[in-house]
Image 1 (cartoon, helix red, strand yellow):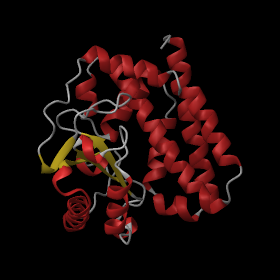
Image 2 (cartoon, helix red, strand yellow):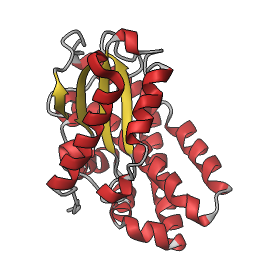
Image 3 (tube, one colour):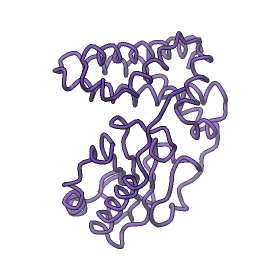
Image 4 (spheres, one colour):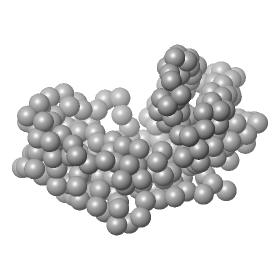
Length: 259
C-alpha cells in the first residue's frame, strides 16, 4: 500500500487563494472558471514531487491560441504570482493551464466528473462529454508513443548533472502515470471509472493485466521518498532505471496486444 502525503488543508487553500486572486487581477471579466485537477484533487499527492494542477478557463477575447492567453494578461498574471514559491506549499510547481472556454484544446481529453474541483466560477457547459470509445481511441494513440517517450527521456537524462536528475525523474513519473492510465482504460473498457482511480488503485490493475514483474510499483514507491531522490544520486539513478523498465514492460504489452 502506497502512503501519500497530501498538502495540509490550510496550505492548499492558501495556494488556491493566491491563484484565484492572480487570475482575477490579470483577467477580470474575461475569467470564467478555475478548477483544480490531478493528485491534489484526487488524494494521491506526493510531497515535493506532485504539482498543484490548475485549469483556468477564459473568454476567447483573452486568449491568443488554444492554451495561451494574450501577452498583456500573461504579464499581469506572472507579476501577480511571480513571487510565490511552490516548494513552500509542498508542491514541485503550480502547473497552471489557460484554456479557451469556447474551444477546448483538440489534443486534450476534457476532465471527467470526479477528477476535478471547481474553485471559482462555473465549468463551461459547452465542453462536450466524450463517449467511452473516444477515450479508448486516445488511450491506444497514447500507448503508441511509449517507446519514443522512453528514448526521449533517456536522451534528456544522459547529459544532466546530478542535481538535474530529479527533474527528469519527475517527467518520467508523469509519463509512466499517463501510460498506465491508458493501459487500465484498455484493460477494463471503463475509462471514466479509471480516471477517478488513485495511483495505488491503478497500479495493481495494470501490473496484473500486463504481467508486470513489479517495476511500476517499485518505481512509484521510490518516488514517494522524494527527498531521497533529491539527495542520493545512486538512489535517483536506480529510480530512473525502474521507471524506464516500467515503460519497456508497457511497450512490450502494447505491442503484443497490437495497440
